[in-house]
Length: 149
Image (tube, rainbow, N blue to C red; front, side):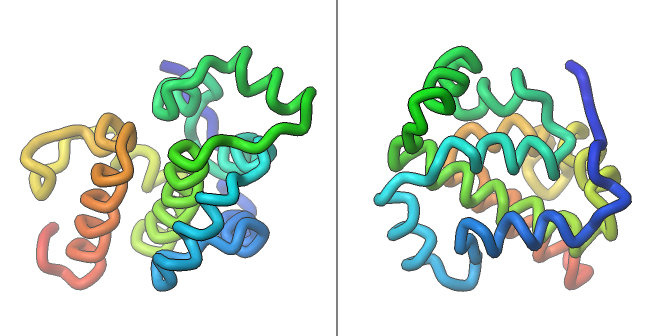
């Protein structure tokens, strides 16, 4: 599992990506609407650039091969609704993670360790589903407000 921390010195970039794709946890209707329309495959690469995820990890979380992602990029194709929703939710998750942990590097480290508040599950593994991303987001809110340490 290769880990990269490309943009830890540019914390505003996660917010820039969220703004670019109109991704906001506070406006679920808008997020779902954007997802239904399908987001550009560039969202995959933008998330890759601001996260600690490798292209293999992100592809696996979306259950899409990286070759398919590259083909979509070449064809300027949008992601399907499910992958779009997952990407948009991951963007908001990284935004919240950076807010709670202060930097992507620390958040990414937390994602890779079993979390007590998530029943001992590794948060990164839960990111395979939209519901899992929601659970991680809720856990981040609990950490933020001191409910769980």
